[in-house]
Image 1 (cartoon, rainbow, N blue to C red):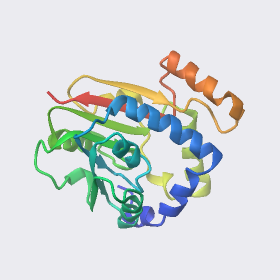
Image 2: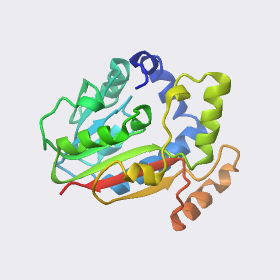
Image 3: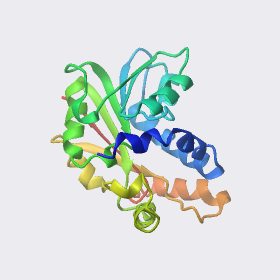
Length: 226
């Protein structure tokens, strides 16, 4: 796993990126797809594993669910707490590979763009299954290896020494679904590129959704625990 120190240095830059014109568009489509899969509801208790600065946590909280956030970085967690004041949110520092919860605690579990920093994704998914109640839902989002964005990020890691993407594990939809021994489903978002005309982004995303394209940069997989 990428070292804690790398993530500790990134909270401000991470949040600032999502405030850029491109970042706002990406956040919109990623959050939309996440909510379509997770369907958080009033009264549910949801784990957000690898919650980071809480960029997506607030969307889950806004739906009426209570959320427990877990992250390896205390600096990231402090940001998430600042964003979720007066909301049903609690958080703790911890490792996704060894979740500090007993079995079947949560109605649903969520992890967004965290598993790509873990070599053994199946073990991480198994931990999410363990702490999810029977009948509950597990939703995991990651960076799609089939996307041109992954190719560019891998190149930046080699040529520019990007500290976040140096040790990242890009995975395909089939590789993510194989992380659990039950049938799951997937979808992708962010079919546009940085070079596309901003006026065309919505059209490109709608077409990607219509075609159920598997090459979007943002990959979500989900499973129901029986």
